[in-house]
Length: 278
Image 1 (cartoon, rainbow, N blue to C red):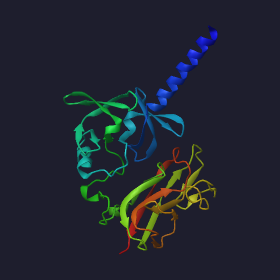
Image 2 (tube, one colour):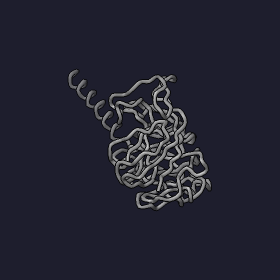
Image 3 (cartoon, rainbow, N blue to C red):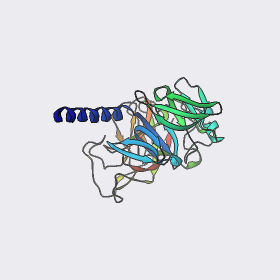
Image 4 (cartoon, rainbow, N blue to C red):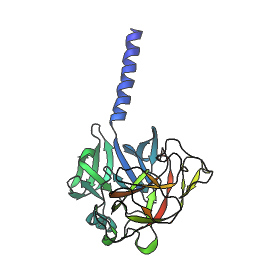
């Protein structure tokens, strides 16, 4: 009998753990500060959002969250305009939008999100959503003209000279700029990021202030935390703090990133001015 009870007990624990793992959705959370957190969305409780980052659960206060992004697809100008007007909205994969504030998360396979809408509560599966906007955030484009759509080669994203934000988490950020193979591009980066829970583990755009490297980083020979780039899925290239024009190795979308093998615990962001030469 004791063995049977023990087996049932262990089975119950296994089922609970399995359900906990299944009841999650991979997301990128944009904080009001402009920082980003990438992980698995698990729950929303009185303490805020629960996100699994690098195998550990992290609690993020609801008041600090601006966007929950399920796909990484470009934000549409019309969506951003509604957020600027103070609306909390949810966006389906189809592009359809409804106004509502996220009030609860539950269920499993897929995760279920509950919104408070003008017509009452509404349940939506996470698998149906592209993103959820809760509020404005620092670094949010202030005008429709500043939003770059996929495939466009138009006005730079860094209008006004401030540069576009390249968060330390996630490792890669799509600039939404298209380049041709051989086309020359200049990068002028600034700022500092923190590469781990150690407050002294700091990197500028040139890389780690202590000179450390990371064997499993996209460019193992470059300093950890350095600013790097790639075009589409081509081989990453170093950028750092040099400002000379670099020839693009391929044609496609330009991505900027952090030379790190685990960006889940990174904090902060770089600012990068991008100039694509004709």
